[in-house]
Image (cartoon, rainbow, N blue to C red):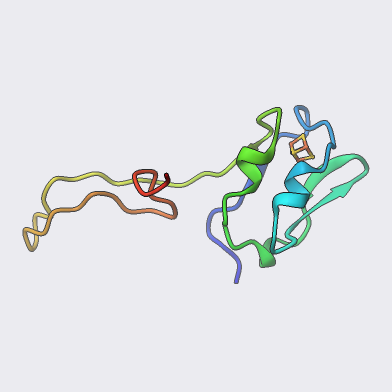
Amino acid sequence: MVQTYLPEIDRILCTGCGECVEACHPRALALVEGKAVLARPDLCEYEGGCEPACPVGAITLPYFILFATTNPTDGVGLRGAGLRDPLADG
Ligand code: SF4
């Protein structure tokens, strides 16, 4: 399944160390000509391991978060929505 959001790699910052490739369990990332690339976006499961694995901050995982105290349609409180809930991390 291809995700709507995919990791973004800054090729200028990337040193080609391969840490993100090792951290990517679905094997969506690869090194090509000394730089990390999202070689198989169809395999990306958005696990989130690549971003913290990069020692130079070359990978960004975009996602959106919606915060609301009350859902105006049914009154149910919402904490957030998106691909990753930062309040649940850690
Ligand atoms: S961990 Fe960062 S610097 Fe290393 S290959 Fe991946 S993107 Fe490049």
